Length: 402
Image 1 (cartoon, rainbow, N blue to C red):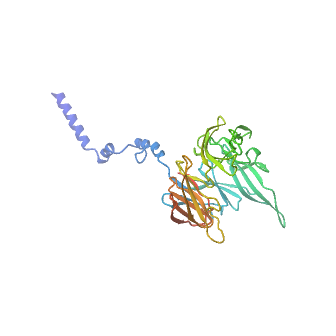
Image 2: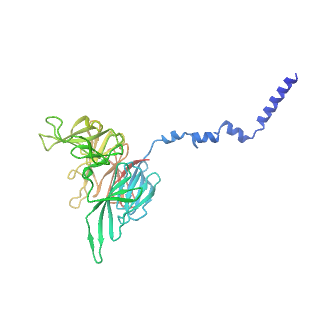
Image 3: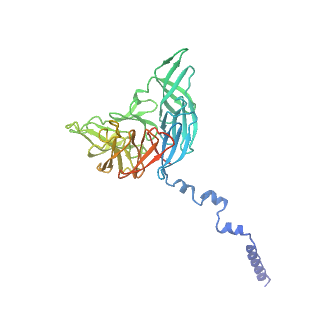
């Protein structure tokens, strides 16, 4: 009996103790995660992996006079961020291979500033000044491996009572050490024309009459896909442009691109379609002929690569002013499944405007150029609105996902 009474007493005391606990302790047990749980799930209860997998938004980046790069929200058509350079007017902008940085030529073209896209600020400055000379940077070219740049400079020697314009130079520049390792009259011959960094980031891919792979260190050719030699009798040489890859330059083994081919019989006629290049076996994987080639000048494509939009050439609504009258522009929309033209519309425009970008879904078309505005049309080529910016643009729009 004493044992039973003791057990009952312990149970009662335990129940009373639970009832006497503070409300905050009860609330933490019933609804809130512990500090250990917060580390594993994040402040809002979502895991870090889930947060990292949130879909990215598409933004435009534009260079705006005099010394700004601005971030533009495509959904709201508003500027959401402005980044000011540290050394004055920007004379040129280059997007890095990984699309995480911009290289801005500033400081009367004597500096290169590196803007971190994620941070939205200038994180590096590189000076190319020389005693007794005026140095003007005119071009920046990243190298595979991303440790060096090729930098083209114009040099002006300052004499006592005059200036001497010297020949341009190319510099092989160590980015981390901010050191010029080599001076050259020109780029190495192997990468002088049509070179771009391979999708893997380790080699040069050369787009010329043929497509070749060049070793980044030795600059020796490792392989080539011959496009200048007709594949079959009755075909002509094939030309591809490195400006648009259906794989977004993310597949290290292949490219899928639009091509054109001169008709060997009717030489004033061009054929076109899609070609897939195997960069491991150095061969053509597949080729799809669509018929007459598309007008690919200034070609812009949707995110899913289903639609392409461009404008007609000069004399057909391409945007050139004539006799003091503002031009007309012809929009052309193509299906990238079979190359068929879906829509063609000629609209009134303003001198100096050109097609610069489209929204990811193709529902908005953006024209810019000389001036401080973005002129927006819808997918049916109808005028929507004009967005006024704080300064004039250089006519280029960089499309980034963040």
